[in-house]
Length: 142
Image (tube, rainbow, N blue to C red):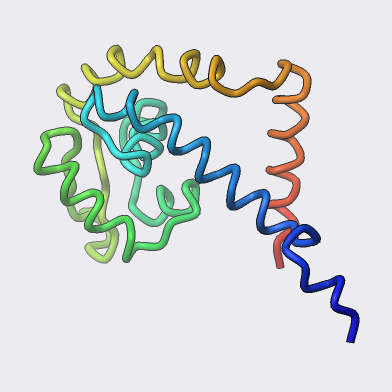
């Protein structure tokens, strides 16, 4: 057996995992200031854009399953950021809609992306290339 294939330094998953953890760690103080977790933040990013979406479509956009999303959305509803309701056309579907309070949070969170870009020392071109490569990788997963 070739031991090289099982070395940590040869695993694509590890730098992806480690970078993800480190970047999300950088978000924490900024998200704490607006009262969101990282997962709540990415859900709010979608809702600030589309205002209303069914839970399955939200999960598809965020690469999250309903087992992760449902408790997250329940907590966000208790915080007054979203409302959940059954779809009148198909009661199996739940629609999530941003509230006025959730919309107000958008202004507070608007500086987070620029604060994060200050923490990530990549040139704009490198950041764009990384973004494109990561989405290319996501699209090619089997």
